[in-house]
Amino acid sequence: MPLTLTTDNFDAEVLQSDTPVLVDFWATWCGPCKAIAPLLDKAATQYDGKLVIGKLDVDKQMALARKYKVRNIPSLLLFKGGEVVHTHVGTLNQSKLDAMVGPHIG
Image 1: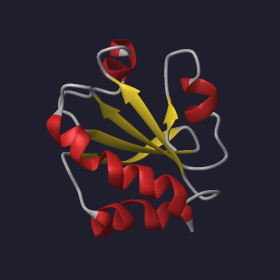
Image 2: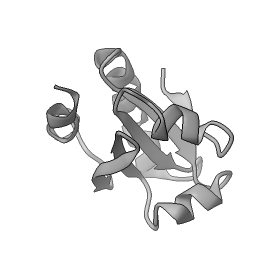
Image 3: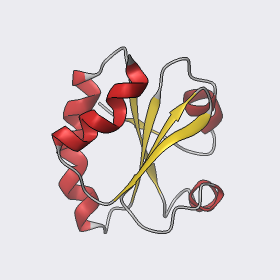
Image 4: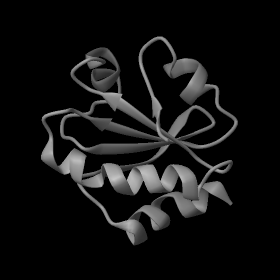
């Protein structure tokens, strides 16, 4: 199950994580965000122990969305060692998700 991210836990759960973290910047009204949610739920199980999946509601966490210059959603930012190492904007399928995270979870 993806982790709910907020300003209160973002530093500890994402920036200080020893495991790579894929952050889904989304909103409840966003159709494409809802479309990729099952894929991300599955990935949370598939990559358990190798990758953390986190969801950040841009309407509730505007400061973090602005900090990472998220202008379109869904935006997926992959963090490793506290830094953004890959960004994907828009929907994606399993093979694109695997290609995005694969090199970083070795």
